[in-house]
Length: 193
Length: 193
Image (cartoon, rainbow over all chains, first blue to last red; front, side):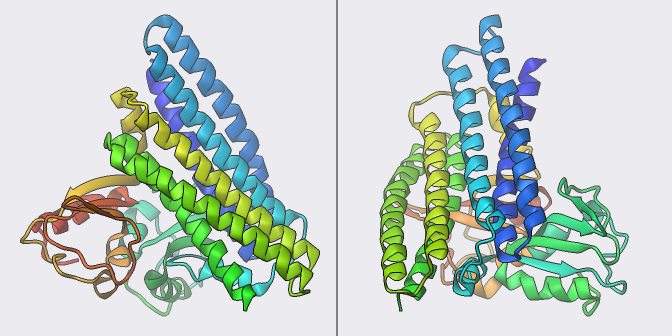
């Protein structure tokens, strides 16, 4: 069913656009060009997805599976995600142009109730070799992993099946309150999630 | 110091823009025009904040407190938040134009790992009369309150000093895993956070 496809595509677009915003701000805070470049990669993907989604919406309208207003609403929602993705690329662009921001500006992003942190998983951490779905990290700590750097490799499509390894560098979004507890867990100083 | 002001303004812009995206999607999922209208209100605020931020960046550059590239980077970051805010308004616009989306499209947003839920606080809930900072709701449950409807009143500037009252309708963003536990807490069926 193409309805199902449109639904999945719209969800993927929304999630990718929001991931891009997180990665873009992380790239600035941590002076990390690789994250900024990933934002650019994702932008291409988002553009392609949105093109497909719009074609599908019109085709479904022709087939009578969607009425005209529904098709237009889907197109509008897809374009909104693309606009958010474009804004994220512009944020990443600040990092890629090698502009060193005033530390005070970077701190402002970190001073929010919602924080972005970078932490390395020590070999003694209880996170090692755990599957995210199994430990329910996000709901127990209020912290979400948005990206993992493992050696030279980057992992962005984090889900419940993602397994954490020792020495993983985690880029994590979450609450200011949850931050310290999370860091202790990753560093192996706290043994309960 | 105007540096401090620029920092605070940039943070406020970023947070408001992200809140607008959450509220806009909530407005669609819950067919809630008031949320969509709040997004429009916030858009005006974001536009004003960004105008002020840009003036300040240029003034600071003239005074020599920021170099040219730094000032331009701040302007770019402000404009990105405004672009995200504009996209959120376009999302809210789908709700305001009274287009009834296919239920399957709404569900797609709810099927994400990150969910948006609406729940009423029952008089027997342990949340009643608690200050958010005190119970560390977000870090213990992985769920963030983005808006509260209290009688006829809406509360959008949720922070650690916000107190939850009985019969509050909470609009909450968080993990799929944390959702059920949170609903039980709000409904008074679960007495531990």
